[in-house]
Length: 293
Image 1 (cartoon, rainbow, N blue to C red):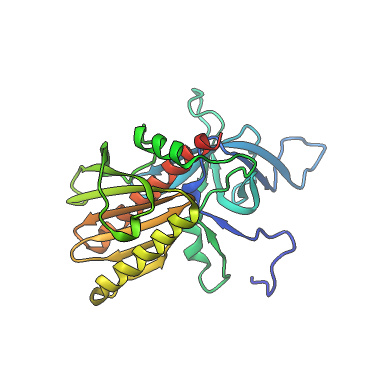
Image 2 (cartoon, rainbow, N blue to C red):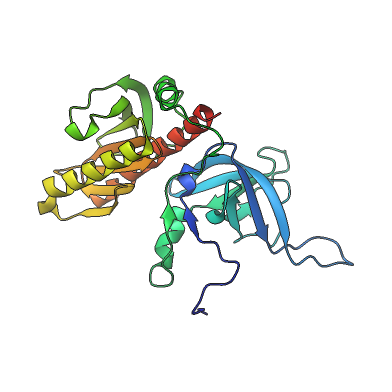
């Protein structure tokens, strides 16, 4: 069944699940099946807190929130972040219950990054890739750069990659001249299914405008440099380009531009490159919350 016009209470768009910061306040509103024989409850609001993500069975990436108010019937309900409650940052997949109490109140969340492709041809939904920050708090970009450099790194890397160190790096590209700082994520492949090599980079800028300008220039540069390979997808805020035997993915959020390169360049290794970018942006947004505090 399809509807010609949006429902009156529809959310205005999607927020990338991977950029929701740790401990962000969340809200879920959905159908509820409550064990109360004499009464019926059409819906229930359930507040919660964002707890990051995981990968199930080495294949399915999920977000995770905690809430003691999610009840049967709420699977499929949108998850919203209170700072921006008109966009969905995920969809409730199910509540996790164990007899021993481990992961009490854990709620698995399907990622909007996986939902958006399913809407192709059905609805034109905008995906935001920058987590909302409380505008009443001013973020200090120099402090953010210091937090990013000092770690510890808290992003969820793709299975098959681990972080060795956060290292100093030099960026010779003229489009990065306005950066405050830049670090290299030294990554170590592991297992037979992983890539042969991978690297990540995080660059911090004095303003979101400077960071976006860097992303725009870099995306344009890479598309031109590797045009003969014919694979460039996304936009400056989140893109991937097939290079000469490697995947190069980048993204921008707030004051930061991030980039990852993974080789070889087969289709099987694209998720590793995009996954490193997602992990780096997740880490950056967590540090941004601290810098804005």
